Length: 427
Image (cartoon, rainbow, N blue to C red; front, top):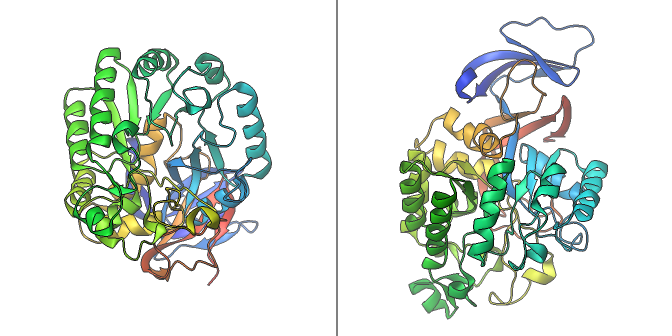
């Protein structure tokens, strides 16, 4: 394959590129990046004029379901949705049914991945058995079976003593712990951000300190253990402030934010539309601006979709009874592109790094960059393409997105995984 005349964007510090170049792929790897490469007779030629050619996107946080939840999503539908969003690697959360909390469950899930995934899927194991914060999983054995890290996402770590022990263990094993920062004793039965909006709608609110108090306490555990932790779907100004201070103190703390928290606030919740119910909830405009500023200033490390598909039966009900979560793999790039790049808040390279080199660095994987000899995982983007998310043409099994029929800008045109096209936009 020979990709010609694209704007090659490679944000890695050791090999930063932003130039019109050609890129050759042979035997699933990048073999040349240069100008005016001459086509061979056997090559497939892709004209990338006016397109961005980027490393394949990496999602540090998504839910692929399957197993007993395959009515909501399965490995094939989830990775198809991911490929259409430009992703060549996704990290799948362990809160499946049953959860990935033992070696057998991990091996079974890896078998599903091997048989059905269109792209690379890196499974997490849960940190505690059955995600109940009562007993640690067999961390060492799971780490030896190449699990990418540990998380009880969907449930917070309620037993800080167990988390303390886990941080010590994973530090020695060089494995990441991903935190769902929430104190459920505080959030209780809340269904949206606590404030004037929840009061006016008559809905139970989630106090903001549910997230920020959890982040504060877990940062202190990192300080004590000299370990590392990654905070997912950070949504508050207070949380950004805490993480900024932790980084200033030299602690090994990273975080991501979601496209939906960047694009929306609680003001967008109308008519009790359950597609706007998520955890953490949509916050007020002050917090929304704080996480935008967090990206602009580099406090926020990466974008994580928190793609959380749910069947219609779990969303077609009252707002209070509906499941938390929205789909996000297919709209992630466009939302962040518009909010951050088209608003002149960050550069092209910074934008692409949020989806590629930054999550790769957090996960400690050899991916997220375009260099000779690397596997050919690439995303081709038309930055000028206008499009709308059609509920009936999305690839996820579930249809719980708040962005249907919204005109978006910037579209993934083609996704290449290990030298093979796994998605191409049909116009």
